[in-house]
Length: 73
Image (cartoon, rainbow, N blue to C red; front, side, top):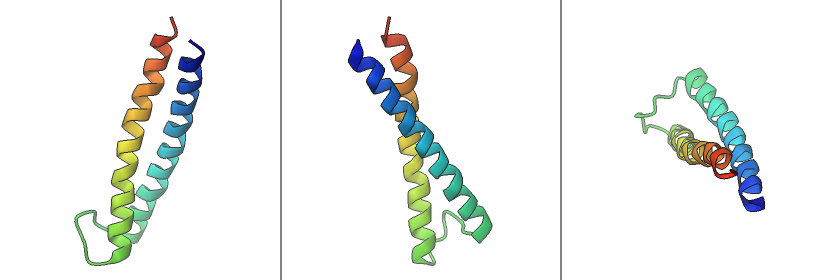
């Protein structure tokens, strides 16, 4: 049960930091006018891929964080 609590804390921290990164990258996409489907520049490609990668970090970490609450019974 100790591992579940520490895993939940780690998953929650990952979720928080990934959410912050998602927000920052989203603002960069909006402020620079970069279209996620536009591959005209290296900057646009990198920011778009990082933005998409944060989604794949946020979803599992959120699931682990929530599951940790129910696993500690």
